[in-house]
Image 1 (cartoon, rainbow, N blue to C red):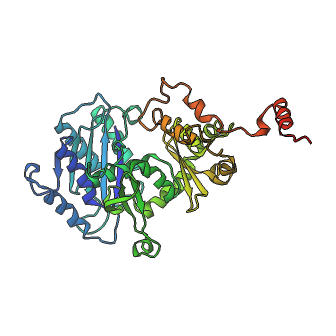
Image 2: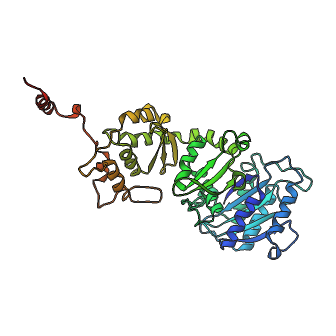
Image 3: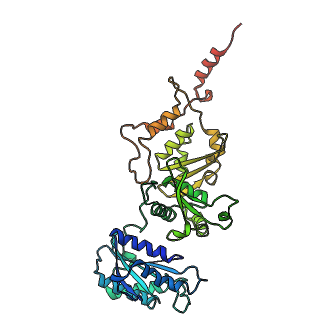
Amino acid sequence: MVAKIISGKSVIGALNYNEKKVAKGDAELIWQSGFHKDIAKMDFHDKLFRLQNLTTRNERTKTNTVHISLNFAIDEKFHREKLSEIAHKYMESIGFGNQPYLVYQHQDAGHPHIHIVTTNIKPSGDRISLHNLGRTKSEEARKMIEVQYGLTPASKVEILKQEMPHLKKVVYGKDDTKRAISNVVRGVISSYKFTSLPELNAALRYYNVIADRGSKESRMYAKNGLLYWALDSGGNKTGIPIKASSIYGSPTLKALEVKFNINQTLRTPFKETLKKNIDRLLSVKASESGFKQALQQKGIEVIYRQNDQGRLYGITYVDHQSKVVFNGSELGKAYSAAALSAWFAPPEINKEGNSIKAILLDNSKKTSYWPNNTHYQNPDHPSLLNDLLKSEYQEDNMLPDSQLRRRKKKRKVTH
């Protein structure tokens, strides 16, 4: 059995997460403890009021929500009575036996699991310490329950996938906007490794979402507030934004700053692989679009930042395969905006007056690689990647010496 404990600041967020699963038919409330009604007669207000009534008794404690998942091996399919019994044993063992809690059985993953929602605020207003709860009492409870019920030990439990929502782009006007934004934000924050808000936004933008602090003169900016917006097809903010605190897990700026520091270390092992993928493209000249489309073939998004005059002043790489985000300068001088500006080849104009750059962009649409796309290259265009890597012009000093000599002779004027 694998036990996961998530502490948070939003009882309504944890409750909403499970109740929406119930509404969709992906979960079922199978047990309650400490509530004054039978689960068949409880509505959302009954559940929320009971838990919030306790959290209001200690308003100094901001982290007042505990959301636990108990995960079992794929072949351990128990009926609801057995799951409720295991949940009760676990909660008693970690010191939450007298707290009100709700137990939900989920059917939305490849392995059996239950979710438990509770609060760490006692009726007296005292709080139950959550410090190292997962490493101490939870570990002891897990081992005891594994033995008592003959469960597969945590080290041998194969959980097919994390219980994170499937990442897909937000389509404003088509999706439930708040839910779609929340799913993207939670999914990107949990899986991508970024070290600043602009780097997070580089990943979020691919899914049509952006994190916004407001203008520097705004009260929201001064208070370190954060909103998440949906983006339309033109990359513009649209609809009504949602507060970071209203998303399950509360991805506020303060919480993100902790993530920034952790990710500095976590993304380091992927740095050299990303550089090697870029190095393979730097052996020959290419236009900005050619370079960008070639990296798309490898699942790497390139984001250019330009000023009003069109001068490139910044570049960010988002590797959607290894889920890392790097600014060019962090990879090294050769990968920075300044170095690439000098390296990029200008576009060549063909006989019809069209830019070769535009042609490359049009062809690449057939083969670009993004997450969940397993086709790196269209078999009908086997040489497309080579075309993208070709220099769009050749300088004189790239020609053989014999051709250079002949060219110089033709240019010589005789009198």
